Length: 136
Image 1 (cartoon, helix red, strand yellow):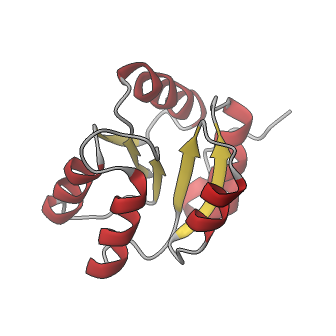
Image 2 (image 1 turned 180 degrees about the vertical axis):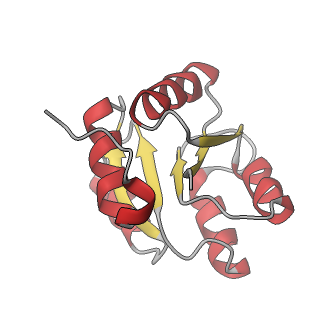
Image 3 (image 1 turned 120 degrees about the vertical axis):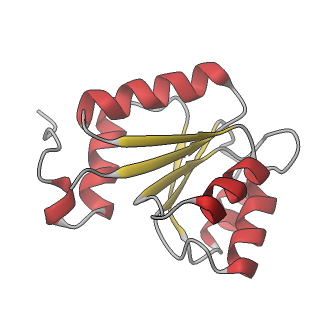
């Protein structure tokens, strides 16, 4: 079974980098992409199977990451494995994100292959993460 990962970020380059790093680590991963929180909610409501991990940027036009977290909690769509991926290192932002039960981690940009590997190993059961390359 291949893993499914949703990347929510308004920056095309950030999505491209995240997707490339994920596919380097997990070549068979199914990658879903959303420009902002509203597009992510639309994808989640239309999909047959929810993503195993969601990488979420905070600062986006339209529906930002915080609003997405609030809407997701209200609608009870994703109950776990949201990883906030943000350039913000503000303690208030980190504390606010970790206040949502669905947020598993907060990673500061830039994303690295090591952070992808450790995230997949930490969040996915062995049966899903079996093909993930281990960090050297």
